[in-house]
Length: 429
Figure (tube, one colour):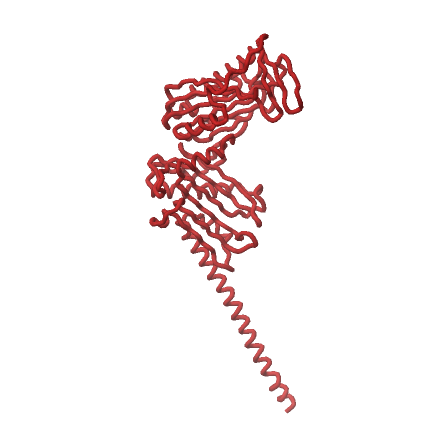
């Protein structure tokens, strides 16, 4: 009887424990089923978001199951009745952090009006247009990729600027320029560790977005290929568009040169540059750095106005006075190298165009007649008139070679009726 009473006392506890175990097991099963369903819903959302332009297969590793994705999208191509600066603007994020989502994807396509394009060009003034875009770009398209740190991990980005001859719909003001930007998450610990494959993925996503927009807009832009064929834009040898820049043929400083320049032709503008890692060579102010730029249409007018505003357009400055002994004084400093610029104008495929070449001499090469040290930051260098004439001849030889090159920007743009406008001495008086 004692055993029976003990068994009767224990049985309710065992029954309660079994029920509890079943409840816990059911709760765990429900929890994992819920996470699996949420993960499936998030993957489905990833495939549908942003007009289906996201590289879903490559982004699945960032999709969680413990929370729903947050999708924000708008734009005139998604909602034709909507007024927006964006044709497509889409952000998909997962997870919440203290300052930003755990992972985020962004795509934006915007029809830029002339004022926005000019503002962008002004911001890029003085920055060599070196394209590291890992895909071949047709004429009228420029692009680049980059990376950045986030609070946790990093992200990779890509941007494209596409010229649309037929125009873009969606803005009240006329627009012929499509700007595309893409941001994707990366598993790299920092921006410096982002692999080339991530850059390529961002580039292909930007290309897919640009092609999607231009095809539906019927804006006359050529489709961009998505096969990887990198175009070099900086290195020990010039790009194809800058192959005319040969320091040896131009008799510039005999030293090691490095080059940068456009990797793809753009009807609106062109850029080539080269500089030595030291200097030396021919007597008489040897050229150690050279730059050639061209602009057409609205870009030409904007560029000329920028130089006019700072007083360095042709005809705004008189030549340096020549002293009785035939020498000329040039001021230099540790922060600024004197440059001689030569301008020309043409009619090209993109409209009226300006060309500007700029040569920088090595004033400390031992070719000056005298030097008057004023302070540690600025000095007056007295040079022979013959040396200055040689620098002028170098600028003209550079311009002539640039204009005559079949693969250079003026040749590709079919420039004609060229007129030389004059020199500008870009050094303080």
